[in-house]
Length: 205
Image (cartoon, rainbow, N blue to C red):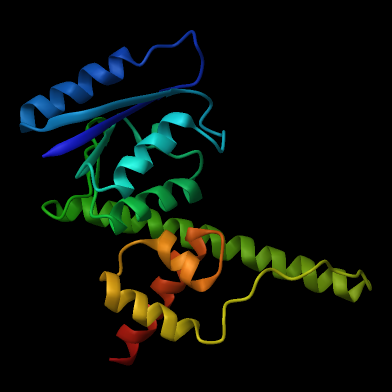
């Protein structure tokens, strides 16, 4: 299996060598072919990372079947960002493997798939709390007579039909493409809309 290694340290004083030793050993043990060895030297809180951008480009090109990373916190800058990354990997049928944490989201590992779904549920819960707090704040602001700014971009009226067509055409893969179809900038919004419609469909049947 063709895989990409991803490592990250926060400062120039640190080295990724210890991470690489463990990741290469894991790939050797499983007989995986390492086609890319990508690293970043940057704080995990930074929004733009050259190495991570390069990694996700490989994922979107279907050049690898798995991303092998030392720990989850090396990959995501926050829980929400991590879930977005995991969701995009999943949409391209690319597994995430973190040997030091026993995480493997490939189809052959049900426990790893469960871990990925738990992460997504945790992020959705976090987002629901943020939305609840935001709505409460907006309500209080309106009560004080505060004029609020322009509302966020709404979904198109026929968004359900657009999601259904996207799912039929792609098999439910490619949230960036779905974001373009829906006219939203954030693939995370497209991901949540698709999940909500899928859950509603399952409840109805």
